[in-house]
Each structure stands twice: as C-alpha cells, then as structure tokens.
Length: 174
Image (tube, rainbow, N blue to C red; front, side):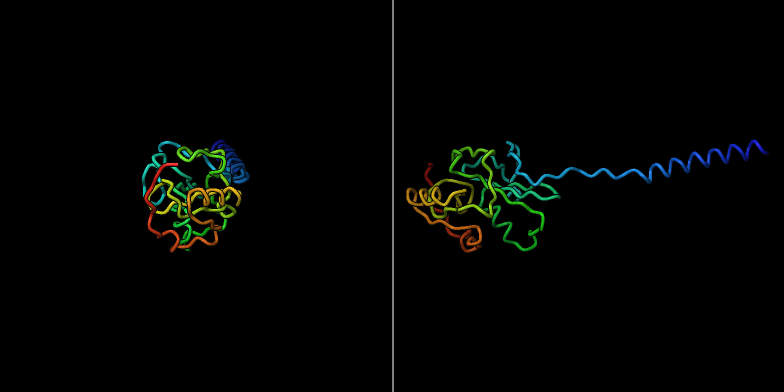
C-alpha cells in the first residue's frame, strides 16, 4: 500500500509542476503592423469583389488589427469608410501617391496616408467603376493634374457620398 501511495503522490506532484509551468507561460501574441501592404495579382476588392489588379489608377487599403481590407479604387475605400460602422480606432487608411507612380500600374512603395492626401475629382482618367479620385501627397501635384486633366482638388474630409456618386466622366487613358 505504501508503494501505491508513493507513486500516486509522485504522479500528482509531477502533474502539479506541469500545470504550474503551463500557467506561467505568457500567451503568444500575433505581431501587428499598421504599415501598408503590397497589392497582389489575386487580391479582391473588399466592396465589389473584383480583382484589383485589373484596374488602372490609385488603389486603397485599410489596415487594422483584424486584418487588411483592399479596394480597387480610392473611391471604393472612402465610400466604405464613410459608413459609420466601419470606423475603428486602430484603422490606418492608405492610397497610392500618383505623383510618383504610373497611372496604369501604381507603385506599392508609394502608399501614403489617405487622410493626409489631396484628391482630384472630375478628370477624364480611367479607373475602376464610378468616380475616379486621383490621390497625391502634395497639393502642387494635385493642382497640376486638375489643370491638365480638368477637375478639382479636395481633401479627405471634403469627400462625402455626393462626391462619390457623381457620374463618371467618359474615360480616356493617361
């Protein structure tokens, strides 16, 4: 009987050590970066589901702890963002800086903070469905495009549903 008690006590002690070691282990947290992410040929627009790579012009993305949402245009992203249920405290919004990027193939190393960008609306440039919002980091570059292609310069805070619902211009390529 003593042998059985000793074995039981030893097993119980071993089990307690394992439980204590497990309880002391810190949970592994997934790393999170709010930096912009490159677009890939298979990425689909979060709003319309179309393949993003199939459209010219600037794209948009929202980076949050819960993941990255990518959009086929700046207008799609801003339209999504204007819906109050999509506002999250940790969200970062990015768009392509078209001053430093070719129109038909935006450069993912040129993603800028969407809330600080200047937008040109009303050009005849081709983009995804609906209104085209050309995004720029500098006011001068935005004004230059507006002068050359027509349109007007807006800030992020000036874009609302009425801007996004303007009829699309007949498109020509840049």
